[in-house]
Image 1 (cartoon, rainbow, N blue to C red):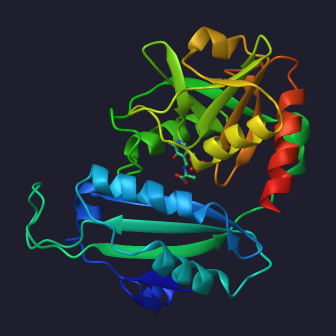
Image 2 (cartoon, rainbow, N blue to C red; image 1 turned 90 degrees about the vertical axis):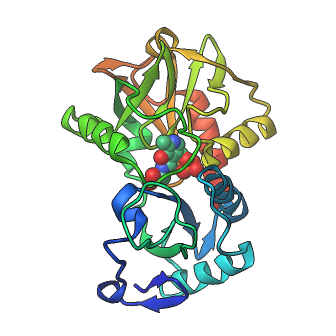
Length: 278
Ligand code: PDD
């Protein structure tokens, strides 16, 4: 489909950015991924608010309003209204005349958006779950900024793939924080918990939605630190993201999680999530 780039809608092979773009040279930009079901973006306002927070975090202004973004989404989604799609949005600090780390005095941001089909969840996942590995968090200390500088996440997700796992769950100072591309939930001793928001993890939109659905369903939860030992002995482990929804992790570093099957609390939350997104 078409790609939105700086006000134009272009064929993919026509959508070009300068090699002097700071996104290319420094990873000096931020992004969002928004799921869209039946042509309707899910939680678009929350995603655009998080984009604004990421931009503020790197000293940039919002290039477009929510209404302007929404018009772009409608156009990108229109060719395949029946297909579930993921919208990808990226804003970089733009092109500067020379490679200098300092923010340029006058740069025009590069603004890009595109849509791609989202694969429906594999049926085996609800029956068997997925596997994850535990890894040291080698990322920086501002994981609340959704930056395109992703090489640490790229390395961690690749390490997971090479270990035959869907995700790497990241541990810093003995605490499990999130996945390389997802947030983390555990059920331990009958208690649902997820780490509190802060600079060391991304404030996931799916995470917040899951907490809302838990509250509506009368499932109590805590936003609290998860020691790696709690993760390793948990009855249920889930990862959440815009493209994965709520995914049950049933093997951790090769060991079964709880019964080794997706758990009852996951089944309850997933049913609510599936109903909500429809
Ligand atoms: N990743 N934590 C990290 C480090 C992430 O990269 C993501 C999302 C999440 C989940 O956030 P949300 O629920 O808002 O999608 C948590 C996206 C999907 C990606 O990089 O493709």
